[in-house]
Length: 363
Image (cartoon, rainbow, N blue to C red; front, side, top):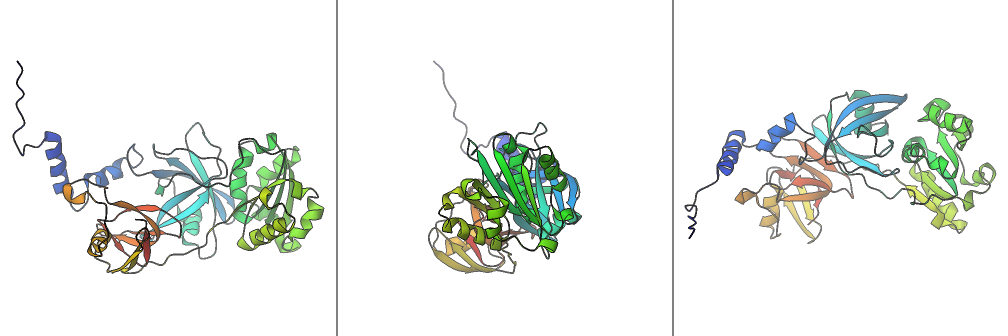
């Protein structure tokens, strides 16, 4: 007969004791916080990427090449990725279209960024970022993509940085599967992002390229498409550019009764200004509380009667993680700020995050 001797009550495994010792030494940080400094792209870590190159495209645009962490699941041409970039002590999140071909041999991805006036993140990425910089990443998302079976005839209607999502489609070989017309607007020929690559495709007959240089030709009116692309209403169309252009295009396609053939992508210009404390809304329950800049959101929610997920007090880390849909929070461990524009879902630890302005938490 075999007898099993139970472990004495209260006895803790060597691994658990080691982890507790490590947490004691590293408090208020966690051991994982230090491991992130050594191997930020490791499996199991929050998704990050290391910038390996910054290549100028025009006077105010650059392609940023990123080596993503092991958790990266890839993208479909036309999708975008959200980057968390630390600028002057504030973590800002922005969305940029992926311009590289999916499944590259080196596993890298590329985004192409146009610096806009007063754009903190875009100017930082284009003019100040250097290889070796670590950025936060989210998985690729977005439905501005091609169907599995490409239409026979396609119109790509873009302006400025709106060329970026369709460039990924072209690099993935759209022009080899469809008759493609690209109508693109930019102030001058030198301002056309990927200008040389696009013109080379046109010269060898891979697509028909119509360039509109607005400094000399003025803005493109949608009615001009009747002459530029006579069969445009018969083509499946992907349009990306400034809000005014997209509003005009959507209205025009609707008036022609072909709105179902139009696919649009809009870039969001929302800016979040962090502060000290603020109103926290838990979107699921509709509960709103006023929280100061020193109280963890976990505590603020519990004090208001919100049932907050948490394993922190039992030593289970990351049980309190929730999506920040919009607003700004401050990490109480190191003072770092994290921002999110409306509709985002930036994951934060509510046990160590305090309100840094008005913010919405998904719960």
